[in-house]
Length: 494
Image 1 (tube, rainbow, N blue to C red):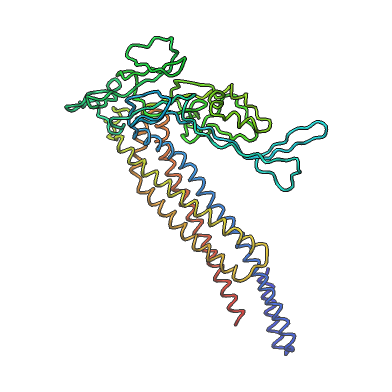
Image 2: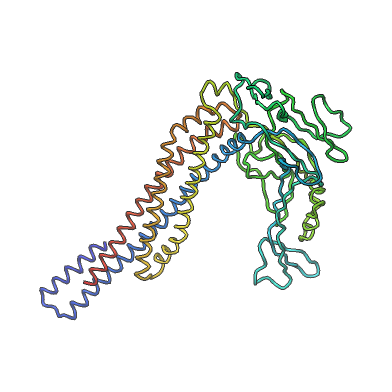
């Protein structure tokens, strides 16, 4: 319709020239045509800006979705690699003081702290507290006070007792196959016939079981005992056949989460408005908690926090019920190497070292995808206000020129990075096949992770390809708009 109107104006102008219409009237008609053209250009620029803004957001969402899935899957693979890289525990001691040489503390819990907040005393004759997160604003009345946050606290002992362990021997990727013996000067340690470890003859075999029991309980045959506190003793064994070597520990308020970065919340938890909430969210095979960990001691959270004066800090918070911690327990858990079927390894030809090598490649892809998301996010944060300004207001020609130049530079950078990840994933075809074949050699969690990462990499590749297509399309539109504006301005100057 606008084209018809503009053509009618031009035809009318030509007719007026032929009819000898006066110069003043001709200029008025020419001005009308210019105003119509400028209006059309502004409308075109506004609609183009809306298009670029929305499609830029779509690219950001695509990259974020693929990143989220890839990060969750990669985290489980990295957990396998980290677990297998740990040397087994060969000795354990209990002390009330500093760490012995070459030993490490296995008690490593954490109280996550609280948020800062604001507390206002409300009501008339009957007063009550109104507490919310974040500091008090200027609009709050005089009867409001800021509440400082309780800082996170590391929990590295149990009522003054420290547990220290010593590591020695090969990690899981260096284990001998059961068909191989140990060389001269080494002895065989291990679980039945499937987890043989060759240790120097003058060193202990790895510890395969740890328990904390009442002192009145008789120490089982093959176990050694250490005094743990007034009422309990710690017993452990190095005997073959009791279990796989112990390699890792957690100190949590419930069965540890499948996601190693999450923390389980207590059963029937009672949250205060300022508590930093936590729970197990990531699911694998319908489970959020890891069955790989075995609980061997529990203690009252109230006693634990009271000894380090944390209860006193929490009691100062308004309406904070510190008595709830008497119903919570924090427990010590140990875990062994994530299992691996050596028979499956021999049949498939896929070794643990090869799995660890390919996991490291996937880790690099996840890091690259995170880098790309940051580029896209920062670009959008800067470009979106420019889009909105041009979209809703009358902007200067410098701003109109700056936006497409900025979008072009960051768009090209995004395309290059996305294309690089796409090519790397394509080159990982052997890794994807390897994970799919190996997804029957371990436990249910590891098998699921190995199988799912193959699908995740393919999904990530197609999401990145779609993002590149959208990015190229928006760049073409943006670049075309830029040159159209430049060409229009040049015609107006002429």
